[in-house]
Image 1: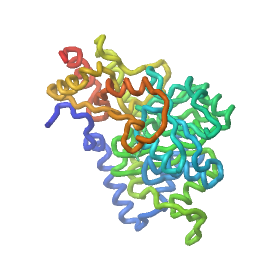
Image 2: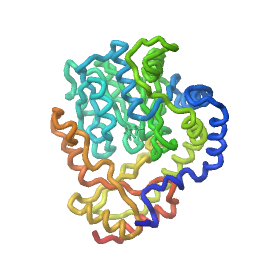
Image 3: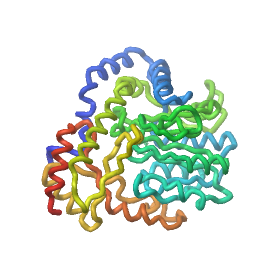
Length: 379
Ligand SMILES: *Cc1c(COP(=O)(O)O)cnc(C)c1O
């Protein structure tokens, strides 16, 4: 169905950059360097200066970024098989896949209904003698970081890994472990995704690892390159998880525009906030903190028993919607054997959430128009 306001139109997202991308692609094609090389080095350096994380390693995608961090910690002797890693129950499955892939045990913690991110007040009671790390996920673009998280991590000697797939460009007033207040540079290491729908999207799969730890960066880089630190010398049983130079070249075109893209997302979120006025719809939190959310998704909540009707009527009005995510990871078949405590907030909101269009495809006026349509719906 051809919608007036599709949920996300990636062609339109990339249209403003198309000429520059074509030129960048031609540069790579003519360079003869298709693995590693100057495009990768330049992009890694751009990412590192943008976030303030001193080390950036381009990798194949966001899931691999997280997998490589955890595998690297195992090679370094920081983590071992069966160690527990805490993660927020409301997340994309990739966060959890990375943990189980590394032979570690994912431990779900429920979320705070206001932020939709991990409820840091529940961290302490989720700890066991096997807890070694927390994976905090900046879901929907909102930084999941506060003093409680830092305090629990410090007191118990836990590593903090940020799943920053949705939040590049977000910042927080809270202190990280280091000077930067940028998402991706707050904790010990972060995984970034440049999947095409993310705030900075490549033309295919791409990702990066950010860290302040030189040894971790070196280990991740080797693991992503067959476990080899120099040609034909293999320190680890590694993988092939490198970032392609052609994608790095595309990302170099788009990264300089991230702040302005994120500002546009904020303007659309504000238009929704100012327009939508219904007692049966809960809008996402908007704080006075600047940039604590980069609005990767704009997720509202409607009564569970009327969600289907809401989405159907929106489609009839020509407005695309989506659900992020319809089934939380602990409810997936592949994690049927995963042991977890009660996760009431995640369970409840999973049936209520609906994402509205927030990407470049719609203007601020469109968002206001969509908001008015929502006010008039009888769903
Ligand atoms: C997109 C995403 C990932 C995975 O990134 P890919 O590049 O698609 O592998 C991980 N975590 C979250 C929260 C994501 O949104």
